[in-house]
Length: 169
Picture: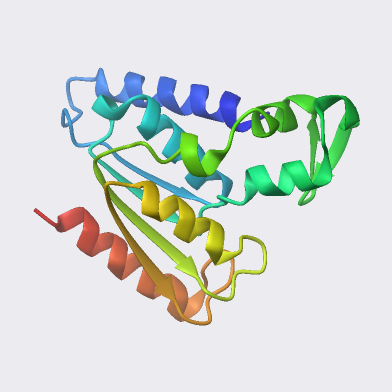
């Protein structure tokens, strides 16, 4: 598992869904949270014609920095390691050590909503601000006091922002 294998899988899902006659062509909204936000950003950046809008909740744009601060080279990565309770292999880090996700996952030129908390202790907001600045039509909403993974009032506020973003003409 890596951001690259997840991006590949997500692209296949989008293509399969949009190929169905019941699908509304050109109306694909990608919503991703944390690492899923980075994956959604990668897919939208690589396949912009498949995506109508992109919404990122507490996106993990610090992933490249985190990987590089832990391992200098792919050879330094153990065969398996733990990431937030999940066992991952070298492929997970290979993808992160080869690219800067604040650049590669932020070239999509369509509408982008980013919602992030200023109290996120997993993904510092500076990485999200850096990534948000790369989007041509991006809007960053910072939730005061919110951490990583929205709950309660923070979740309700994020969902209101998402609803407004979806229904915007």
